[in-house]
Image 1: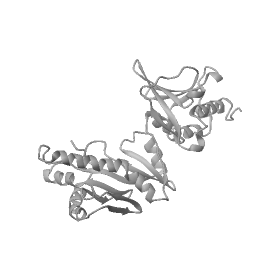
Image 2: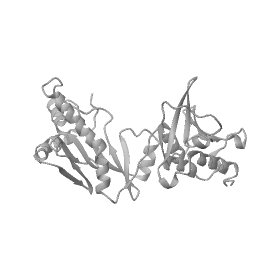
Image 3: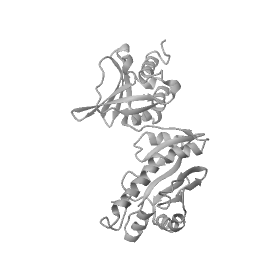
Length: 309
């Protein structure tokens, strides 16, 4: 079932625009509100570029045949043919989004605290009146070709054609979400633990700000390592209370493991482990690791806000 996304008015407008757009030959240049990219000749007559339906959406791209099929079926296939849209959000909106699941949203650029988002569907929006007809395989190949272009080329072209935009990216793992909550969501329950300062937990509320949490959230991307084994040895702990269940993150001391983080989630009586690799986003910051930040954070709490050098 295709999920609702686009109003019936916009759906009809996309069909109306189909004739004018499909008449274009060759590579098609797109320039909407200064956002520039080109549609390859191979697919330029297969898609329609629409203006955004709200003040934050710059443009949206649909596959024409799916839009036409949805209208012919007369069903609630709103959002049929949706390939992607480009929208903007503020820094404060970004912080709120990062505290939750950002499926279908990828931040890729920034300009003076305005962030550009590549939005894509999380389900299939390919619609035909019949899926058994002659030529359906070729149409599915066209659909795949459109999506490959959209997902692999469009953001690169926008950045290349808009030099005022700075590349930006964020991962959205469970670790990312909890770090963002620690940095930006007041009332988030968490604590630090370090054997260097005794058995009692360290309360981050004793510090006047969340600079350390924000540094972990902003300066690194995080990738799950599904087949990796956690290293041995000592570690610092950052533990969250999520709906009454503890989620623990271990930051390892070993020199070759300082950007490895083990997640331990307890669900009922069972514990589940996930290992993450942290990567510094800025090449100038590669010498500082996530473990370094955790050690500084623990020291700052234990020493009344001052890092003990």
